[in-house]
Image (tube, rainbow, N blue to C red):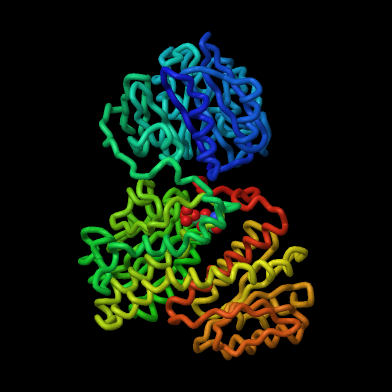
Length: 610
Ligand code: AGP
């Protein structure tokens, strides 16, 4: 992971770099640093253990100033979070470098460089790159050539920003396996891990492609492709506005994002349904023809996006009569799998940059899938660019590390996909009209549910002193329970597990006692009575139950049972609705525990390393 920013300009670039880092903090936040070539052509550097705010404070105390600079916010992979492991790394006061990714062959390069007399000051995989560039410069004093020479020796994934005190008005950028964009100003250029970092200074961007190297000066930009041929890349004008990072008065981004779900869902449906029908062309020009041939669906994703896939698989089989298999991307990418005839490959990713999901997509493109479809929230991401068909969830930028509105909008997108594929497999026009109207009712339903926030906050008090929690669900609500458990562990650091309620007696029931809160999701469906029996098993062992139940489910509160009643909703839509109180529960538990909700420890928003 990690976020990188760089700039070459006439003006002092340090405020641009610091603002860029703040906007990239979702990518990692255990340490941060910046390096600037000052007016005497000396590289000056500040690094801190901690977040960008601390870097800002250090910088306020002793500011750096200069027209060329690079900066980094880190999510540790090789070497613990520390000042010495923080980027930028510098070699012999000449070269400074920031890196996002992993250098897989760093051990062998380190041994070679030690033999050549280099002393290592960090435990990172990155330091071999800056040393390598310095070594190459001793043979050819041109920084671009030195970078070209060095990257031929690197294995792994890397986005790099490199500056050189002997060539102070120049910035070299490299993209291989990790994202990197170039921002175009007037007489100035910038680089960053994403466009969001640079929105305060430009709306015009070039997305580097795999293997690209950019030679950037204030007034010129030359891009070389992976074969070192000068190439042109298109300029994209972003429609995002610079102030999307505003908390809008909410205490945390996560809370703002939970409360913005009605709008996010409405936005994700806008222009995607027309006269109660799905607009299939929203999945891509070819979608209609591809979908008419689909005989099976394979979904691959990570984390929360994987949970969305699990819910969609239930819909796909039940509504569209299409076999659907869901797999975790980090497993799929290394497994030999059999592709059955006319199978559509679907990857789901909020960020569109998740390394495992991207690798899974790349693998799928080599296999005989009928087509690849990305469901993604970031238009300019690598996954959307690599996929044949794309459906963009219009959730708006999600800043909190815990995914909330991205998840519910992914579910909306997946439901539209199920209808679109189902049209050729038994979904009638009348069914489709009903489904679309139900989807359109969701923003209002979510709004009503959000009104119960105080009850959920009160419920959260029961969890704050607990170390473990169980989440139970059945059918499509098992992945809802899984998502609830993931949210709780991610932001409150309480160990939480989700189980199919029917599995309780096959092992986890042994864990249940008065100290084990058990959360259950109980819509009024054909599995309700089965679920109730499972919950009896918990009560009989003194387990305290917290049940999110349909108001007609006849689940009543008692000393050991807390119930939040939810008004009845069409069964297929219920997983979307029932997710929301679980998000709020995790949020309020984390608030009580005083956790760092938007930036939980050890995590990052965009997981661009495997
Ligand atoms: C969820 O709250 C997580 N932060 C995480 O599981 C996330 O969903 C996962 O890393 C996948 O990310 P993506 O959707 O951007 O690919």
